[in-house]
Length: 339
Image 1 (cartoon, rainbow, N blue to C red):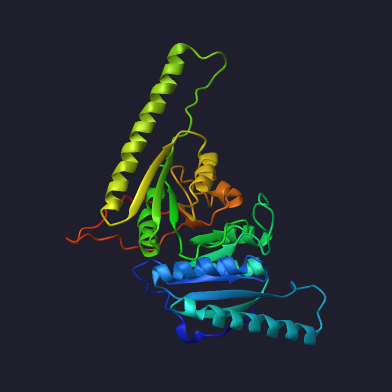
Image 2 (tube, rainbow, N blue to C red; image 1 turned 30 degrees about the horizontal axis):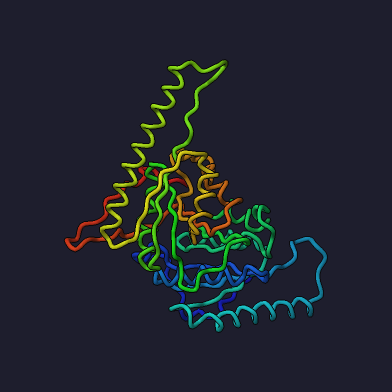
């Protein structure tokens, strides 16, 4: 593999993290139709976090062992790849504070994954497919490999996602299941909402209660289910009201919603109904299984959601909001980091 920097003057020191938690935003760009959307979302993130933007392009070469290609053809394609990235840098330079580009050579999924592993403090932005695909096609081969191997946070842009609003994000959705892991993304989401002047929508879905049944349910069984459902609704409403009040104290527009349906379908539905521009969630929720890279809800949304999805894992330090007296927004954080 060879690596070339096109604009090395704005390189960042990843050892020293800024207050916003990420040292740089990295947009993985290809040649397909989703290219502009990926860059637009990456610019919005970089500007909101006051960090530089890197356009990362993989110049795809043949795997080792395959028939050697014509050296002249290879050099022509290589120069074209570098030239396209240089054009993109100039095209978007006026839209962000600092922009650079880098071209790496090899296989796309492998090189992006290796890059992310070497730079765990950078936010990776990736399209779900290299080119447009109909809704319901899940993830492309490259995106699937990257999703499975990226150790840090990832912003996934579905090919069916609406165009980025010219005014930036208008509404952010944060799913919360009451766990420390899910809640730990809230300070980041609050900062993003503040920077983008966006509304924050906090959602908790109360899953249906279920009993083991080998025959007709008795009246006391039905009553038990109903009592449990009412209890879960009450606790969820109190929980979201507390978070909503704390976030509102910092000048944010915040709404809270408690739903009582299937978790995955409910998040899909409310995201569409509310016209959500971005979903921010943790890679794991209450289950927190260490043997899986993502929880079941997050994995489902990655392959089915139409809205951009920011999945946060191995989160770097992030300074919470401070009030006039120097106090910080009180949040709970998981005692054990998911790897």
